[in-house]
Structure formats: C-alpha cells, structure tokens
Length: 280
Image (cartoon, rainbow, N blue to C red; front, side):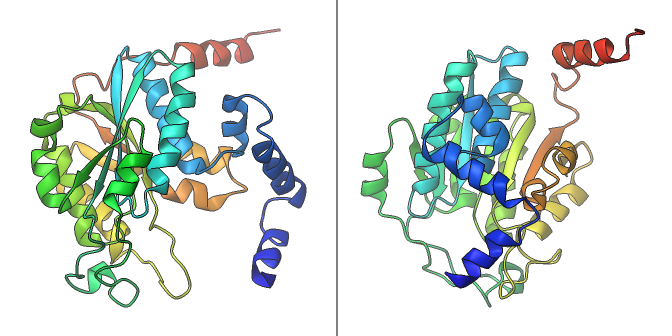
C-alpha cells in the first residue's frame, strides 16, 4: 500500500489530474468521448484502440470491423472490451465483432530465453472457458494454440475486417505466431490497424528488453516485411506526454500496399488546419 501511495504522489502527472480522472470515472461524469480523452475509463488503452479503429472504419465507410484480443486469461479484458464496444457503436455507424484468442490451459512451456522463462512459466493464467463464455455478450472465444487458430481463423469464423488487435501473449514465440494473421489477404484488415501490447514495459524483475518478448517479435516482423510495418504512433508522445507508458504500449500496423491505404480521410482535421493558418 505504501509503495502504491508513493507511486501516485510522485508520478509525472499532477495529483489533481489523477484525482479528477478517478472522480470522473467513478461517477461516470462527462460523455464517453470526453472520458476517453482524459483517460477516465477502464482499460484506457483498449478504449483508445477500439475507438480509433471504429473511427477509421467510419471514415473509410466500412460497415463492420473486428476487434481481436490475444491472451485473455481470466476474461476481464474481453468484458471491458465489450463495454467499450457498446459505447463506441453509439458514436459511429460501424458494428464491431469481438474475438478472444487463448490456449485455455494457461501459458505453454517457454521455448527458450526469448520467451522470458525467468519470469513466465507454463500453466500461468488458466482460463475458466465456460465461465468466460457465459459472461460474454458478443465476444467469441478462439481456443487453442495461437499458431493453429490463426491459420484457420478466417476460414472458420469469417470475421469482418480487423481494425484492432490487443496483445497480451507474454511470449516472443506466441506473439510472433499471432502475426501470421497478417499473411492473409489485405482485404481482411483495415489499412491501418490499432494494436496494444501489454508486455512492452514490464517490471524491475521482469526486465523487458529489445531482444526478448513482444519487442523482439515486433522487430523481427518489421525486418522481414518491406511493405507491412508495426510502428509507434508518434502523436501520442505529445497528446499524452505526461503518461509515457501510454505511447510505448500502443502501435499501429501499416500495410502500405493495402488497396485502400491512400484513401483520403483528412477532411475534418485539414479544415481545422486551414482555419488556423487563414490570414486574419
């Protein structure tokens, strides 16, 4: 408890912002869009990615998109995602599907040092599959080894194009296996996919680095693909500069060869820019 209190007091954010955010979230003040803007929502990173994916889909006139979570554990992330989906569907004329990928039996045995066996072991984070499925309203569980379920996902589930991927697979190997989804035809995705990686930062015992875990999987994917890249969203460095972890954990998948990558979506923002530079 003492460490938690000290952490709150000495965070880069002013304490008044932390307390205001807590107040707004607790009493459900302001609109959902405003709560999201200040981070006064559960699983802020999930909310941001789901909202932005739906926003892009709306601009590109996609009627439906899919949200994917990899590594569902107890199922709390899927439940939170459903809540955000319900709110986001009120804001955009886009319907959202939700799929949760998980072994069900917990983490597999680490393959080598890249899966960080000093911190993770096989069997952690087992799922009560029946309990989670009963809790879900729209989410569908995709149970099995991620490499195998990714290989059959499009044929078996016929999902709407993917706009958001939420990663919490812990391992380098499992994360890299999940990226095999990107081998599918580009029509199965939005041209830019919003991605969250839960295991980018870690702890002083975990000690994440660029040569293991999710970071290594991302680097290897980028090195292997010329026209598909998983990149940081640099606008977050400014928009959320008081919260440095936020920009670190959110990445954007860009498919530069996607048939709709160059479709213009900048009307609203460009009008604002033009108004600001107009001679007074």
